[in-house]
Image (cartoon, rainbow, N blue to C red):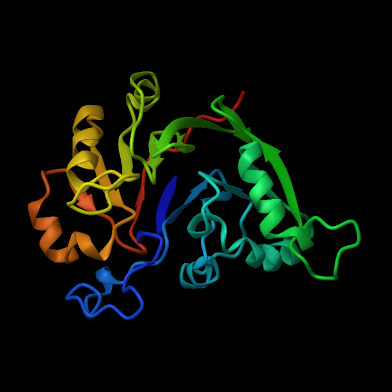
Length: 260
């Protein structure tokens, strides 16, 4: 199984429009952050967790030739804004894109992309097959996926575990019961916005604290603001086994066991 960070930035990305801070002006490619999402390649299929406004650029950069499913954490624009660009995959595969989301998230998708769900569709609109999910485990084809309930301030959202990889973005709180779903994962990605306290996101310290609590072999910080600082300097401050993720970072781990 291969995991690729398609984007590791916050809702505005990095650099931020019209910002002249040292991070936004950095020439280090690791300080150029598109909106956050990851792609999982396993058992011959590709799954994207979230599909933000930079989706087209991310697919082209990673030379993705097929995509079988998109799983949504929640309905904010930086996580759903690129859904129109699945049209190329529709054309290649000849079938709708399988999209997995909670009912509330589906309502937003239907509103934002109403033309894709019209009774009389304009030729060439995205073809979407919606699948309703909640906190219960589900399957993408025969690959098991475990949702993890998180709170993004007062908004209930989902993280996901596939095999021994777990992805938690836009997290502010997680219950003790949901943490149990993370036990045994070897690779854990957690959002860590910045050093200062934020209403709806983990700080870097809070993200590191959760990684230490779960004890994966490898921890990654994602969904990073320009306020967090330079990538090179941030990495030097992290404990062993934890890294600041960057766009295009990938790693491999054991394939998840398929549904029998």
